[in-house]
Amino acid sequence: MEQRTGLLPFLSFSSLILLSFWGSVDAYKNYTVGDSLGWYDTTVKSNVNYQKWAAGKNFSLGDFLIFDTDNNHSVVQTYNFTTYKLCDYDNSVDNDTVEWSSANPSNTLTQGVTVAVPLLKEGPTYFFSGDYDGEQCDNGQHFKITVSHGKGLPDSLKDPSDQAPAPNAADYDSTPDTAVPFDLNNPHDQDADVKKDSGSISLHGKFLDMKLHGILLLLGFVYMF
Image 1 (spheres, helix red, strand yellow):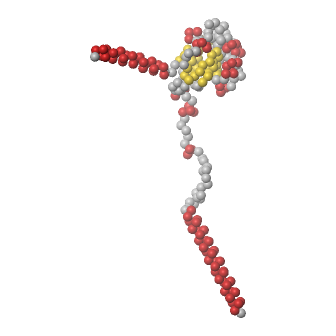
Image 2 (cartoon, helix red, strand yellow; image 1 turned 45 degrees about the vertical axis):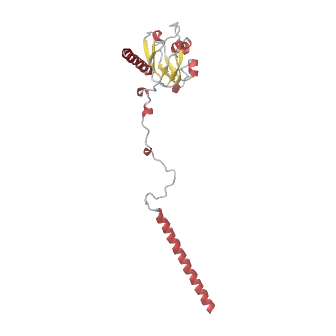
Image 3 (tube, one colour; image 1 turned 90 degrees about the vertical axis):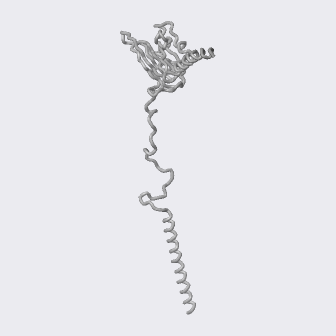
């Protein structure tokens, strides 16, 4: 009995540790690219290896990549492998490539820049510096990652158009799929049309019967005389 009582505090403490661990796993994360080395090419930081830095990390929707760099190095994000492979931002397509921070090589005063980039799309995502016609990219300033769904995007990062409620069908002018059998200006029962048509047919039959009787009478008089 004493042994069980002694285990309870230990188990409770262990459970709290596990719960806190799982909570931290599910939370959105901020990753500082390159850690203390920052975001530079090998001519500035000879020992940078961004692909090695990214290896083993679990990037998910809603996470942020933090680029600590300066105004002589740019941050380009693309979903286009060809753009990434060519280190070519200038000929990229707008809907698959974003330049989050543009370099200013003509600026003689180098200033530190911190750029936060949200991960908004699942699948392969590529990063590079597009400055100096791709020279910095060729000198090691590039890497690729795969973004998983994770918890999905938080509301703060969702496109407002994706969150807008769908319009009601009544808001649109629509044409019925089939013809409406009623006159909307003068609605009436269809049975009345049927009765009206039946009455006209009956009168027409009576009129023909009277004409036939007249012809027979006329023939009778001719035969008698």
